Image (cartoon, rainbow over all chains, first blue to last red; front, side, top):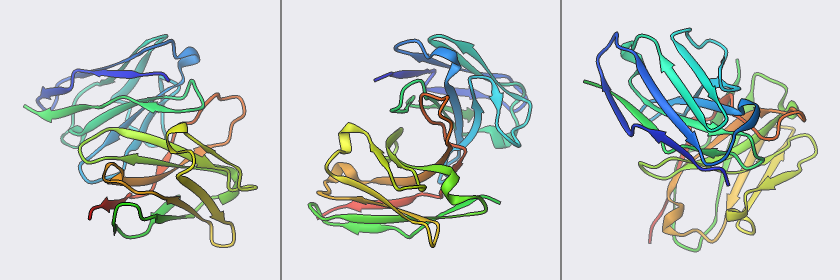
Length: 108
Length: 123
């Protein structure tokens, strides 16, 4: 099983600031088979990024993904009030998808 | 627009079974896999398995083998997930989630999700 470790656990930032979230895999996620999701309290996750860097339909361009191998990053260019949420990474390098434990982005 | 609508919450006793449903609309039901992902209170996300609505084939993660069954009704575009032998650790929100069918991909990512259904296991 590919284990994903996200850091930090919580990120305290102000609106307008840049957020950088990390996702580290226990083994290489070749071809960038990695996705990112946003989950707001009481809601289902929403797909933001797939293929490590491809934005899903309707996702604003302030969200960007990068990385390869075992290190991946989600960057939120300038935080909007609606961006404060929990973010999960997920690998689909194997037929048994696994998720990271999440990073909470909270208002400072 | 794509919608996945799940049924209401359930409270079950240990040892019982629960069956949750997910009704799809707004797209070609048989052209996408449907998955079940659960989230225990305050915890992360756990993939349980998938069903291919075209033909009904299933794939379950080893953790749930023997306890989970996923079925579909193409006439109503609905998928079902039944989990048996419930224990307190099964208390979670259960989501259905859709993925594309792409044989070039080794795995799955999820572009639409249901709203989730809380299953509580308590004596």
